[in-house]
Image 1 (cartoon, rainbow, N blue to C red):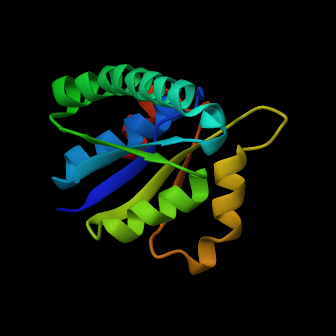
Image 2: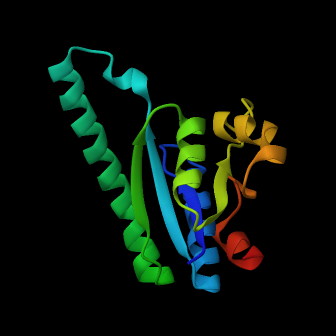
Image 3: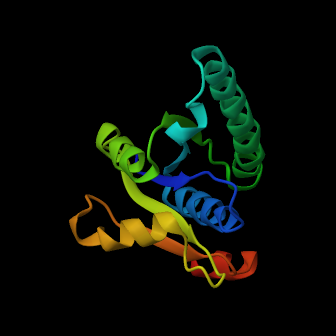
Length: 151
């Protein structure tokens, strides 16, 4: 099954990327892989404290994911899968693409503030010519209705 992969984070534009990926998957009988990456610097503590922080991070991600997953199931009839990886975001995204040959496209939300589109969009767009799949960048300020019209 063809899958759209989207990165789960705390950004505002993540919502639009989730919507777009779910709508595309629903219209193509595909799936959605939601990737959450835990940065390694979150666990540079003593082993016991690092393990507790790792578990808390996973719990936060699972709760955040469930909000999106419920909407995808209820509104788009898409049953997303959650993948949690630890490391640097770009390397983990590329690692997940390499590990799952069904991932056909990466969907990223692009920020709209003066800082630019965001670190993932900036980094991956520089590598776009050598990536093994297309990247779709969804502007963070698109309305739900506009996304529906595009998909």
